[in-house]
Length: 112
Image 1 (cartoon, rainbow, N blue to C red):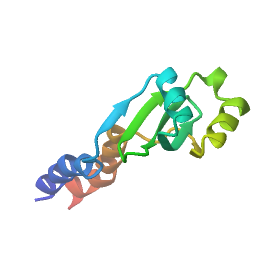
Image 2: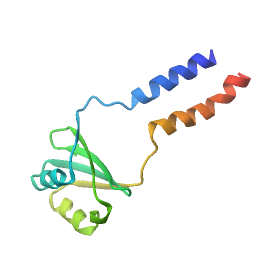
Image 3: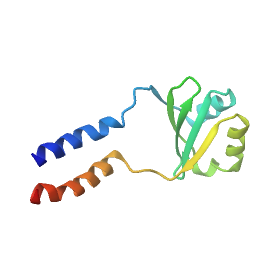
Image 4: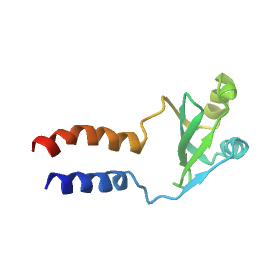
């Protein structure tokens, strides 16, 4: 029973993170053009240069910002273009989340 439960969690947990909103991958140049055209609503910039956010049409996007260009001039430009900015560290991948769940559930498989 515990094996079936663990398998169900392994299959269902990644699906819970799935979004039905279309997602676009923007080049850095397109990202800057969209910001200047006020088509970016928000952006979350990670310390490794990965960035994701929402366009004004509600669609999600991802881009990569060259780390050496992610300084105050970029932030000032985004603020001037009325983009909501959040800075973050890279999060965990769904694979590492599944691995964490597996380690938590392993004792149940052996002792449950």
